[in-house]
Length: 107
Image 1 (cartoon, rainbow, N blue to C red):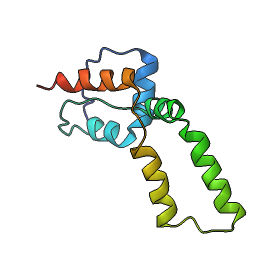
Image 2: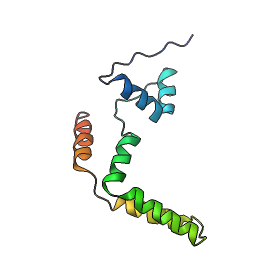
Image 3: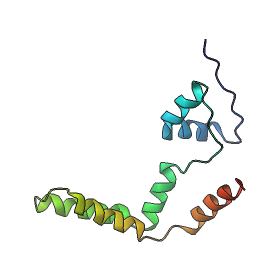
Image 4: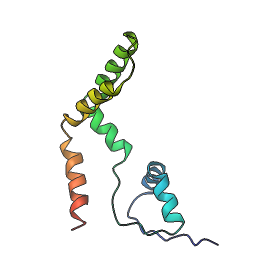
């Protein structure tokens, strides 16, 4: 019988469900008893917040629709264009502060 690891988390049940959904492989690794270093998770909710603050949802959707209208393949160049949109965007300060604060806890 596999012994389930005990996790002590200072999070709500809703956040625990979200974390399990975001990291199914990590959940499985913990379940089978493998050692997993401490860390934190940046969720898809946080990523969606980043996209929304930079109007990237709209920009990416418009770009994708142009590719369809022009019957262009979604090539590496297209993917690189979207990567540039993301990497050149400003990270929301509130999200940045939260991530930096969590990171600092690791010394």
